[in-house]
Image (cartoon, rainbow over all chains, first blue to last red; front, side):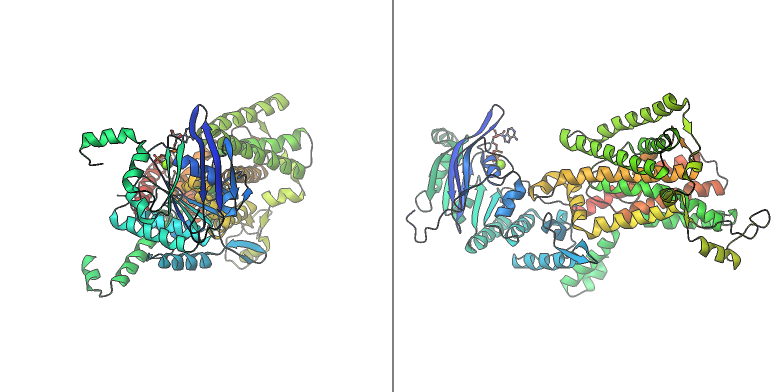
Length: 264
Length: 374
Ligand SMILES: Nc1ncnc2c1ncn2[C@@H]1O[C@H](COP(=O)(O)OP(=O)(O)OP(=O)(O)O)[C@@H](O)[C@H]1O
Ligand SMILES: [Mg+2]
């Protein structure tokens, strides 16, 4: 690293392999993530992006390889361990429950409590207040804390999930394709949110297929292809065309692009 | 609707107004509240003179409703956690039979018999839950197996040990037992005597008990029902664990991702359902003084229907204990009310089927409103 601050990486993934039975989803991937950067992970469908970040967030145990968190080797037995350490993940499938209220979703698994007569109760008032405040900060005006998540738009749900992770003191925020199902405006909102989060010094791992979204906020770019990576490029070192080629495995796309008349 | 909203100048106020209206509409208890009002109105209009609303009548349908409530609370929390238990009915038969065998056949003190039966049944509930979360099989299938296994044992044990399928004589054993009275006793007897003495409720007019009130106290069964409903309601809506119950049933994977111990929640809810079934069984055994191999038949479905009438979604993640209690109340009032009104009792099943269908349709509609799908 030649950049100005050069802090130590907060998380280092070293030669991670993950096998599902006979399927080799990851064949030795190494990535370092630094605080305050947006690290983009790109790759085609089935490249292994989701699998990779799931080893980072304690959902999967790597078959081989090491995870160093703040310089120390970590073994996450389940997502709770990773969350406790400060690794929060917003999954492709969001981890939001449509039937539950925004406030209940926001605090799911981290409920604030109060004691009444020696018994512990869920502190709904605190939950409601904090939820409304955090949502407002992210630019979403809720009708009320008990509005069901099911009534929010896709982008709003993403924002709730991101706000939740940041509120609970994430040091690393992993976003699995947060923009894939969104329209132009909502995508812009989510990208702006990513930028806000990064400026707070949180490391963001941003997974996407979309090179333009990646170029918009990314500081460094890692391309996964069939469970492997060719290394990490910094902003300014690589252009969108090159990234696009890397994602599809170079040659093949060039041929494809020819036949489509350069529309991809 | 649109005309009134257009008159309002501030856009935000309009949104607020809509939401509170909608919020009132999408309470899970809505169906239960409407149903309860409808049922009471009906019987007050058509069966008021039948004795249904004097002290014995009220006690009669309250007791039946309380029975439904006890098992509905367990079924409700379990359904919200995303699972079913079809073995509730068999568990009731099994628990009662175990108490009878331990006390009458083996001669243990009643309180030991009751405690051991509770431990045994809750452990079976835990096993149900453990198998469900470990194998990932639908709880429908796993507990269907338990339904047959438990019913089989409930018939087999008394037949091999006593050569009969009903074991009686429990009342003699239970005489003076401290734990037996927790399930078979009555409370507020002094209050009811006072009511009787002051002519507020009817008293026996002749015989050895002349002057005593006909209803001389509230059976512990009803007390248990009230305790369980309050406990279940507070647990679900006012605690952290309640949020986990909703989350586990709403989307188990999503809940796991954020660190909710979904498996533990589900297993605990299976145990709680078994616990409720055992309370039901113990009260019943203490009341009848006997245990029968056919006790509790079809109770699992009645519990599930009460819960669904109470607004819970069959798919989990949504529902209310108070709603389930109202569902149970509707059940008890209609079942006994038809009896008081002299209506052929088989029509009760017709009523059940119809109301179940209506409730499920209403719930589906409410679900669409909440999740915004059209
Ligand atoms: N639990 C699993 N069991 C077996 N195979 C799996 C499992 N999870 C992922 N895989 C396989 O691993 C490979 C990588 O999947 P992964 O979900 O990581 O891809 P991805 O890069 O996230 O793709 P997408 O862009 O479509 O989300 C795929 O071939 C997939 O079939
Ligand atoms: Mg993926």
